[in-house]
Image (cartoon, rainbow, N blue to C red; front, side, top):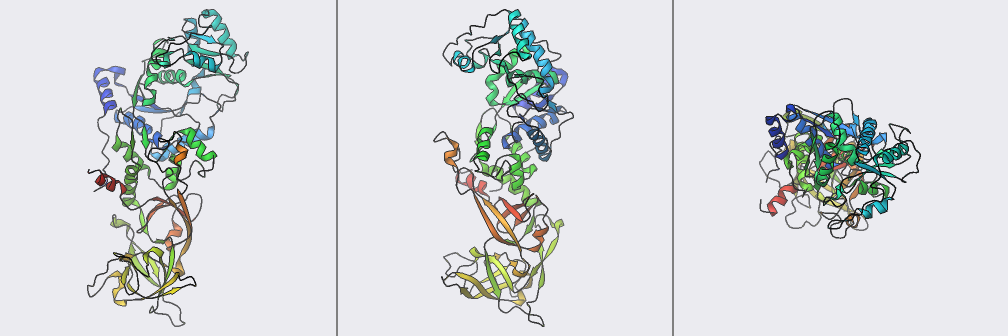
Length: 566
């Protein structure tokens, strides 16, 4: 079964909504979106979908999409993360317009609007602690308990708010809450907190503020300030929309009121995307950092060799829906494999080497094995990539799994008395083996057929296996990392409630003594090549001659589809 083709962006419920808005003259036909990540961590595969939606929809309607860093929590935010977000966006193929926006750009206006709500009796200062406030909000089906400070006069609340702003009170001793409805069915409307006192140094505003807005207070108002028309969020913000609208309805906005619309977030099997849990993987040493190739961060996927285009095509294929679902990671890998099949150069590498000696290979006048150059195609999918010369001689490395002294049924690779083809070179026939004291094979001996140069038989005889190889005298030593799923369960933590219960203790295998053909020594950092018969491998951008397996050659997604009868 062929791998899925990525469609061009077509109609979905959000694009249909915007098209109707434009037909009706809503927002005067203008379309503006925004991508608003918090600079408190690195972007992951889930963000990739949001990026493709936010920027893609704006592009489809000749609109604009801002990047706005939601830097409202100085406890967790760093400039490093903001810089990383910009770099990841650029790698994925999106360039936001200048300047990059920040929620902190609007702290002054947000505060003035908070005073506006206080003056109109729509917000109040609460002196209860966080636990009491949380308990007082009640729960679904339970009534809330109004704060004893809820009915203070606007004048008293305004005085307290200004003193909070000026740093007169201790951290967390007071908060500003919107005065909405303590018995609303939607818990978000039960007098949500708007501001907290926190004496923290902010990486952009320094020590100017000790009063920081919550996300819900800053989000919609930042959209309004920027002129966003369509605020696109994932489904977990569905219950926040009435609060988003309430704030906007009660403020003197400078222009149109933006509208929030929610879509399904991206979840993958065998994967977690919670920033808190990803941070725990790093802190606990389960992975080697945020760019570990097993991580679903864009940095990890890039280091592993995932092409940005494959991620964009995958996001286009799964589309924009209203229902959350978990997509098979094999589907994403199928897009990676398809893209790399078209673009990756082919090379030969032996991961678990076994010596193959050709006993009838010619020698020169001083008894040294002759070295011959064989021509091998770089990429059969792209003839324009041409061929390359690979050295071939009488001592070679082959994969240990490609030889069996006592072959099982349907084993067609090298074994005593059997003839195989060496890729682009010759037919060879195994004649003998050398074993160590434990009886393990340490060397295979064979003869080659000089008439089969180029891997072709002049008499038309057939062989059932073609094997890759590397000349022993010319081999480049390298390390190769092979990866399995980081989590064994399709939905990590679903059975026990803790995703870490499903960690795979064998998610990586490091091979330290792989043998590569000489051309691989010149592979640019970050480039992906196909190790013939083994899979696609990315040259590590930081460590020379360390290759990460990106994906294998096997079309696992097609097999899943076949088992499901599709």
